[in-house]
Every structure is written in structure tokens, then in C-alpha cells.
Image 1: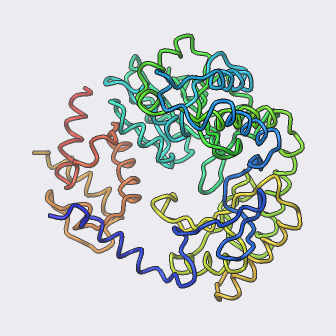
Image 2: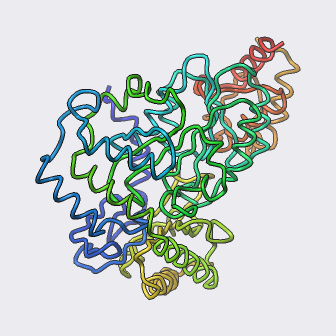
Image 3: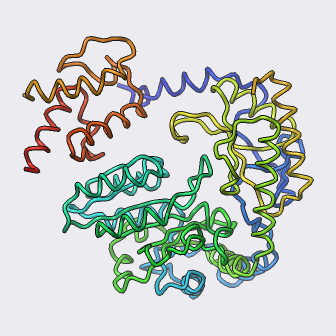
Length: 398
Length: 82
């Protein structure tokens, strides 16, 4: 029996989509001109789907720090954090993050995915419960699968639904509530204050994933928990370097006095090589720059609101009533229109994300735009104009 | 084997989702008979949980293929709780 036969239905679905000029899963960026522009297939293209929220990928401090570390420390550590893979730079990055979050402890992981995997799998023991939002990112679901805990799921952002479930759990059991500040597909914000208060009422520990909210939410860019003034209710905050920070890696911060034991029990932390020194130096410089960059935060929010207002005025069906984040998602009626829209938009010179189930909640099809702080107002207007032109060319009713 | 009352309650919760009017029995499967997608299943699970005031953990869902499987699991959880 061929083990790959079970994927035949997926292959059939993929081949049924009418891609003619491009394929969203095979886009190649030949040149990166700036934080906001690339050359794709010979065409100058506005990048509007790269999660590069704070536009840090070409920040001069980060570039300089990365180059220096590459020269001084080489291309990679070739080892785990708990063996030969901890350099001075790794410790400095952890100190920088702990300082950024005003927390005692920090652990840096090799990717954001592994940060969730490593934290959740280690925290959820055999007799414990992990309570998650139904729209959680795959890394949260996978962390749950890897744990030995019992997994309880509640309806997306529904505090009452969550509370009804917490009420049914044993009062004295170990319980971890996992929520995200901003959900990556629709760009909607969690009612974190209510959720964390309810979680605490039922004696749960809490983990907040700020992957899509770090950098621009809250006065210091720490995320939604900071913006809502509820960081004290979060036992663990997890984040990534691959979005606002502009490189790759992940982290968890906490004030828990026993936090450091996780370095010896978290398998996704232990059984992989640590981040290369250049990446670590880049992340450190970038986080320092983000902390002091209120201007970029302000401009990013202006861009998000401008794009949301423009697309709404044009008549597009948007996933959120207001711009709740730099993620602006447009609902499309079905996969065929989604396919043609995405393809035509790329031909018009805008790269956005075509998002389809199972990555999207409720089986919806989205043209997902992520705005960058370095987009100019003119580029935002251009994105809006090209959305409108694309809808006309493919005869989309909206 | 689950009792008739439990099965009846589950039938009632499934009824609004049974778009094709399939006759419900303990052996009816959610995927191939009722053709429920994963999102509908998720909503149904939530309704069953609230109706019986229990938790159906995500961990056990892959094993619940038929109505009878769900009814048995519900009864097991209800009895354990009391």
C-alpha cells in the first residue's frame, strides 16, 4: 500500500483550482527591493502579505549587528542551547526581551512555532487540562497534541463559552488557558481582559501568544495584554521574531520563579540547534529599536486604518468592522473566485495571502493583507486601487 | 450500549444539522453518513457538552465515529462525574 495515497483528495482539490498565471504555493521572490517591494516573476510587486508589521527587515542597526556577529561568531552554533549552543548573544537576547517585557525570565527558541510547542507540551502533564480557543494557531494545537494533557476547546473569543467549560473542570487540577492577542487570519483581537480574568477566577495559569500583536500593540509594543493593561494576569507570554522583529526565532517570558526548569524539560527547546549568532544579534538590535519606535507604531496603525477604510468604501466585505490590527482580511465568496482574485492581484503587482480552510476559521476564503509600518500612504492607496481593478477584471460581485 | 434517552437527546441535537434527512440510528456515522464537516462537528460537540453539562475532550474526538460512540462516551463521562 502506498502511504501517499491518502493525500489523493488534497491533490485533487489543488489541481481543481484554476490557477493559470501563478500559484500561491509556488511564489518565488527573486529580489527584495525593500521592506515593502519585491520582484516576482520579473514584476515589481508591492508586498502586502509578509507579516513584516514593523518593517524591521532592513533596519540599519539590525543589519549592522547581524553582519558583525556573522564575522565574529560564524554562521551557526551547530548545537542545542543546553549543550554548545548558548553564546553570549543568546543570553543578551534573553535579557533584552525580559527587559522589553519587564519580566524576570526569558527563554529563546529557534522558531515561534517551537516556542508554543515547547511551552505547551512541557506545561501540560498527564493529569492537567489545556483550554484553548477553537481558532488557535497550528503551533498551539500541535503543542497540545504533544502534551499529555486533556484538551478542552471553546468557541473563538467567546468568554461565556470558555467559562462554562472552566466551571466543569476539577477545581484542584492543573489548568492552562492558551489565548492569542490577535488572530492571524481575520486579524481580530481577543477580549483578553475578560478572558484572563475568568481564567484566574477558575484557578488557571495563562499563556498569551502575542505573535501577531508584538511590536505595535500597547505603548511599548509588547502586545494586546499591554494595550489592555492585563499583563499581570498572564503567567507566560509567547512571541516570535519572524513578524515584527523581522528575522526568525521565538520566545517565552515569565515572572514565574521556577520558569528556568523548562530549559531541562521542553523537548522543542532541547532537541534542536540554537539560533545562529547573526540572527540572535539581529533580533536583539531589532527589539531595542522597536521599543523606542513609537513613530513606526503610529504610522502602522494609520496605514491599517487607511487600508480598511478604503476597501470598505469600495464595497469589499471585510472580516472586522474596524481595523483591529495590521491584518486586513477581505472575504471572498468561494475558492474559485479566491483563486482568480489572488492571481489577478499578483498580475496587478500586489502580493497578498490567499487564505483558505483549514488555515482559516469557519471555512471562509480570504484575501489577507498584512500592512507594514514602512508602506507609504501612496502604496496603501495603490493597494486599494489594485484591489478594485482586480475585482472588476474578474467580474466579482461585491 | 447507551440508553435510549441519551441517544434521543443526541438525535435531537443532530436533527437541525441533518440536511439530507438521513435516518438516524446508533450506527450512523458523522463523516460518511451525515457528511458533517469538521466545523459543524465542532459546534455539535459544543452543544452536546452544554446539554449534558460535561466536557468532551479534544483528545477523544477522533475515536467517536458513530452516534453510538458519542452516546457511550457521554454516559461514561456523566457517570464518572456523579
